[in-house]
Image (cartoon, rainbow, N blue to C red; front, side, top):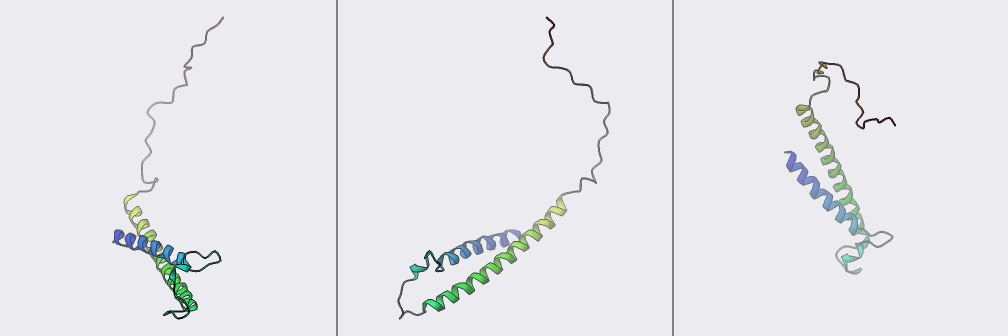
Length: 108
């Protein structure tokens, strides 16, 4: 189930990027690739409205899959990990020794 939702999430991300790039912005983006004139099937305004709606729907689905993946990930992590409080602390058998200098000190 996790893999299926992840694949849908990636497909939604790619579609969302494509739809956003197709929208006409101040810079033009890829919105000019639609072609056609005023006699085309859909006018510029209706295409803009359709792309805006499509962007909103894809963004909503993307957020839903993001939250679903996060919740599923949290559930799986809770099953596999234990708290650090549950692990016993190993007692030191002997006290730590003082540090010994590595370089010998010569007296001249």
